[in-house]
Amino acid sequence: DIQMTQSPSSLSASVGDRVTITCRASQSISSYLNWYQQKPGKAPKVLIYAASILQSGVPSRFSGSGSGTDFTLTISSLQPEDFATYYCQQSYTYPRTFGQGTKVEIK
Amino acid sequence: QLQLQESGPGLVKPSETLSLTCTVSGDSIKSGSDFWGWIRQPPGKGLEWIGSISYSGTTYYIPSLKSRATISVDTSESQFSLKLSSVTAADTAVYYCARNFFDSVTYRSYFDPWGQGTLVTVSS
Image (cartoon, rainbow over all chains, first blue to last red; front, side, top):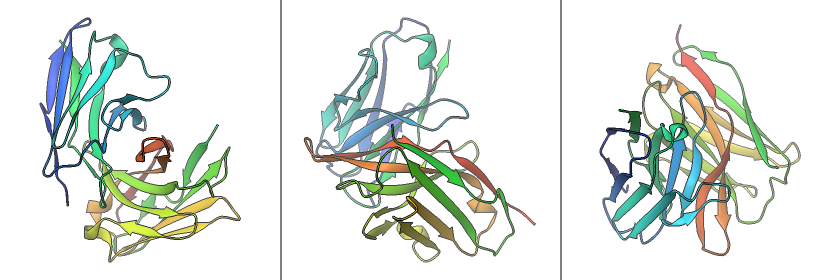
């Protein structure tokens, strides 16, 4: 199985901050990498797929980059509604696997 | 607009079989190259993919659950289902169904949309 490791596990940030979350795959997955946002009590929502393509309707302050084993999710200017948990997920092969999540909290 | 809705018992006894159904509305379950998946999330923990099925019945499972999990599809009812046998407390989780959408432009897939999730508790 491909292991997905996110860092950090949690972070505290203020509104307006630039936030970066990283995701590392245990083997190369090309650009088969998706990012999801999950708010408490809600289902996850896809933000970015294919490592860098913004899902329709997702604000442009979210961006993704990377290829191979190392990926990044960036929020350019954190907004109040962005406080949530973020997960990466590989779609390169089965079984599909998720990172352990990064919780973004208010400083 | 495609919508998915999970249904099934919220409480299952240890050693019994968990059974959930996901009803798809707003679009055909026979949609192209898409798969339909089950993902679970134990309370306070992360996401775990359980398995996926195509409308024609091709299935993939996570190896750790393959001996206990069965995913099936009923295209006439626009539903797909999960059965998980011999459950223990470790199977207590919110269970989500989701479309495993295949983008024919990028040849990449992702889970979207998701159902709202249903909490299944394993307890006597």
